[in-house]
Image (tube, rainbow, N blue to C red; front, side, top):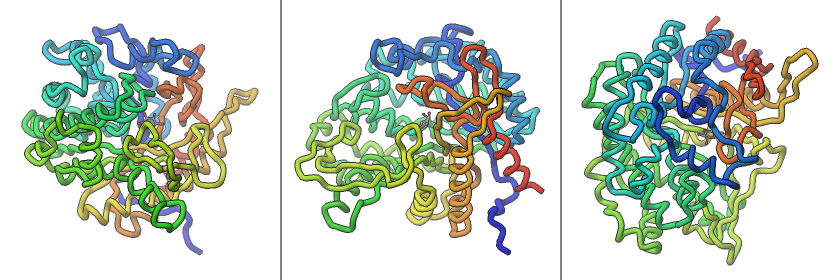
Length: 457
Ligand code: FCB
């Protein structure tokens, strides 16, 4: 009989992921400065129901309880992000020691519980003070980011050895500056390519700054990209070209900028078309390029892309006129995303083939479903369990086929503030009652606990 459960290597990291603005709350406590997400979520009409992260799920005050939950789940890793404006309320300059103390406490508690901390520097909450100076459109932004990276590494590098610079820079650049559905809410295609360039320069400069600061032998420095396969709906050349255009903006722009220090030709064409070349010097990337120790991959779904003559480019993929996207057939999650575990295997193997020898982590994977709380308070969430089971099988297949994956993180530990969707989308393995803040482990949380335990026995 074959064992349906893949066996993962010793030392594999089993975690969950969260981000600062989505869970911490306490936005004015402990000396934190405002971020662009405070501003954006408080702007009428920008989030579902006018929801904000003011309180979020109050993690700032419930750190001890939340680490205890991770212990109950048997996790050996936890991926979180640092709020830039807690360490540097103005984005640069004076360090806020209360902010440092909060993340030191988190790191210490995690380590005491045998849980490896995995920190992301930037999960979209740019200090508002820096936005006021132009944000990611400013040519100074890469240096601001490098300064912050050095401060974080200096203050926390004894507790944290796995670091990511940016989380999903595609979202920061294109949802933030072209579609405008994320902070800072700018809707200008040219600006989105400028922001993408500064994010990429910032990534490389931050890697260098972290390598030069508080250097430790077990440091692992990387970045997290959301790689969404853009599969052509048919083999017709028009559909293949339409899919390539989406792939270029979503995936290849960032993979090449990070790993090779250059942009795909199609992106350079878009730069010309939007006049971006007058605002940036794309060749700078090659000069600042730094190697990474691992690549973090966030995977949720795939898009099927077809060509429709005359269709305008979708705002989040500026330049890709004629490309239209659909989810694959079948049931959708609450986010309207299809469920396609094969896409995870495909993504990991593609990166492994294109960049042999690069260690990988799956830094986010998970699903939003409308959970139902039973009379006894329990939450049965069979669809989330099925989603995780399918994706873990695909992960095992990818590893068996040669992908060097070192860890897997479910999005998310807790239900939380899902950006423009507010609190309507629930991704947690742990339910949070938003009135009382009470935490209840869902059936999927127990399922994940047992899966991890099964890997260790
Ligand atoms: C990813 C984000 C994360 C969360 C999940 C659902 O794009 O990194 O913060 O919103 O999607």
